[in-house]
Length: 288
Figure 1 (cartoon, rainbow, N blue to C red):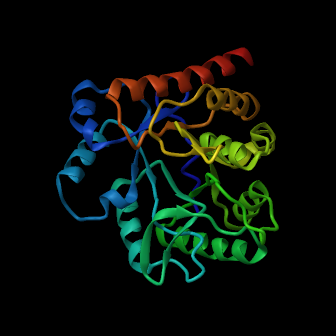
Figure 2 (tube, rainbow, N blue to C red; figure 1 turned 45 degrees about the vertical axis):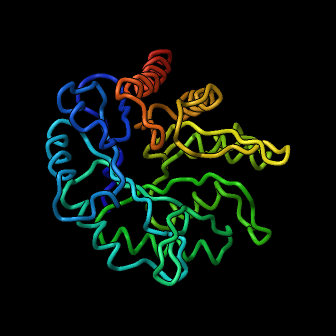
Figure 3 (tube, rainbow, N blue to C red; figure 1 turned 90 degrees about the horizontal axis):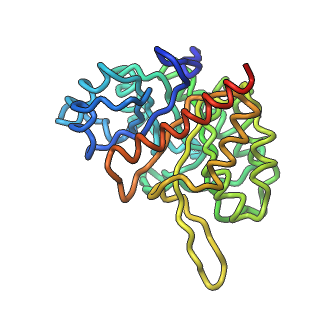
């Protein structure tokens, strides 16, 4: 497998990007914002034609691309849907993205898509399932993928492997890399009453191919504070602090700012990416 996720952009500085939203297609083509790459959800491009493809083809002439899957269902015990894998492969072959990624989750049962990223128990048996499915996907597309850590709201009594160990073991067995979502680390730790700093401090630097940042919501449910990974606001100060802690230890990594609901003007998204780039450049300069 190729390790195409280990990349650096042309020019100076470290790579920081944003989610590509239909609301911003025209604005990106006219204003050409100074971001290094853009990310799209593969499932939004699993058709042969349409205006969204025409825009993306033009945009890709100017920007590197990351393709992020949200429906592969890597945790499905029944295996991957061959038709979905074929459609995913077609998107990858059409756009030749710099980074390809998916989630540690499941979302399909009996051929029915549940439109959510559902958790799975972290066991030896489920590890074998995810490894088989990643192998299937990587063989189909002919390259390595990154696997994203989940946001958690509950735990399974049957889980026997800590989440980070689970991710490291599947990476070692498949050759996949890690997409380290810092917001997910923070949301999960606060919900599960664990330490996000300990998680961040234990991630192997060599496995991280990309970092995600996003906003989250805080809900009060029957007197209990719950953090929801909704990608609907600016990155919180606590997540920025955790990101700086990560980059200080592992060095600059391609970093993407996600914003999928309550989508703001393009300038706000670009400003968030510039903050990430500033963190990476400042920390790198301090170590020169």
